[in-house]
Amino acid sequence: MHGALAVGDQQAAADAAESVGMGMVESLAEREASLIAKLPIEMKKLGFSTHENFDDIAKKLRDNPGMDQRAISAEIKTLTDKCVACHAAYRIEATY
Image (cartoon, rainbow, N blue to C red; front, side, top):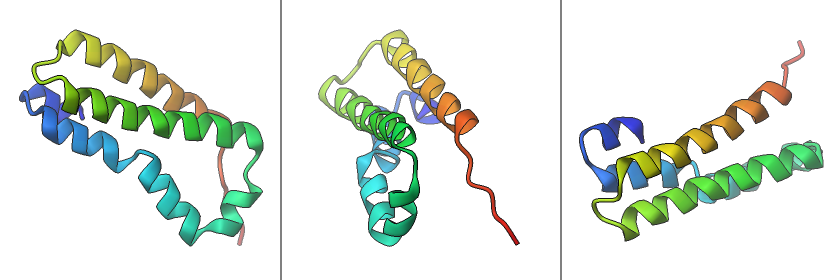
């Protein structure tokens, strides 16, 4: 998203955002249903809302050509904070 926005390509930024939106989560859930079922509900709530935010950003970028870059950057910062919080709080560790 950042790279596309840096060169003024809102469509590519929207595509990047959408690629990690709820469509990705639904695809993962289809392939990894047993894993998704084991995740703590708090993680699911935070994770799903975060991925929904990616879809929201994609829609805003598509619906508002020439959108103010500061406004979308602020939204991406808030979204990134949620990503960092979730990944810091929840980890899946491989056991051998």
